[in-house]
Length: 316
Ligand SMILES: [Zn+2]
Image (tube, rainbow, N blue to C red; front, side):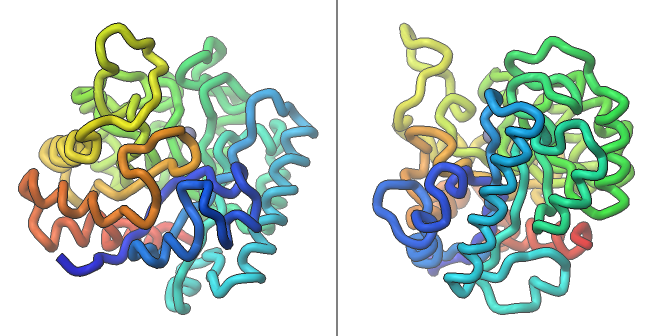
């Protein structure tokens, strides 16, 4: 099979390594040369703000990495995508996202500021509660706050993409009710194949698909398959046959919704041992998708056509 270009909807490499390591490194899952070597065209680079940063500290943390992203663009030939038109430029492309809306510190005006810094997608929460609502693992607070609803409406107005990976089920359903635009799950698999709260139920998959949103296949072993007997739930090591299992998640999502819903959302550098070892190996996923019955055309859709179509419709 020839190299298929790909778009990847989530990685943590920016906050893991800073801009210098994005340009060149041998220690992380993602670097620009290996991304290009593997067929990469567009990467969503998340600013993951750890939960110990609150309010102003979270804002400062995210601003620091927005400036690192800017330096990355300036020192490489990467096009930072802020509008549909930017996708007409030469690649490679990068989109800046916030993983956890905590840097907004509950202030709707902060959305304008982060928009101006380039942010075009926001993962509303991470695993804890924040100003928006209830996170998936440790969340206990209200499903969605008044600020959360206002934020979603304002994001819709400005065409900032609403990402529901990491949302608790309670927040998920409130958010889709509130959003007038398609929502995404940038890095989540199927809960039917791996019963983990970070994965999506069949109803959630159908809801995202019905509103023409997209779901990124995530390479975190814990969201791909059941942990081997005797290990903890939080196990994390390279899963034997993990890419093969992940292709089955893709087949299930496509079967109960449509192939147009499925994209890639690796979470490189957000986990220790992704089922695809690093970004230059992404084509392995194409082989596995073929084995579970996807046509060449479907694989192209999953690798880049679905993501591109979504962005051309939903970016400012
Ligand atoms: Zn994540």
